[in-house]
Image (cartoon, rainbow, N blue to C red):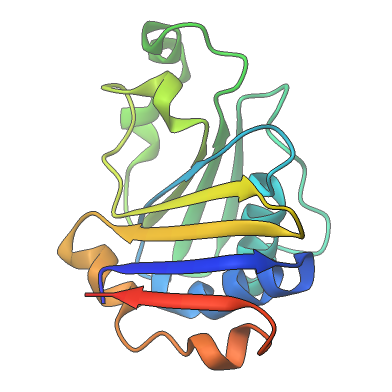
Length: 167
């Protein structure tokens, strides 16, 4: 499976989706979180970070641009690029220096940092739906495909929510 589509899922299913993904990304990689304001990017990132053991209180990087979460064997770098006008503005963050060891990149608004941020292993596109939200997860590398392989969709979403898997 290289793609996963979920239609009309509620917030609890979005959180469950992030929790299910968490143990799969422990070795590090890059997840791009795309979608309009209020679609659930930060909700997804927080749930994933909590499931990885980053703690209960996880600050949004909306104003700081980046929040670092050090956990045993893994560092997560959570970026929110909403306030960035051009990718060149990211140069002063020193992202290359933060890429040492096992690093999980969670990048909200990745399109604003194109060319200056790590390439996506997985893109999570979130969108508002008539009820809940739609989520499309697309593997962009072998790493991302491994994360989605055997993903137990039926255990994550309720029977009322529509699911399609593409390989």
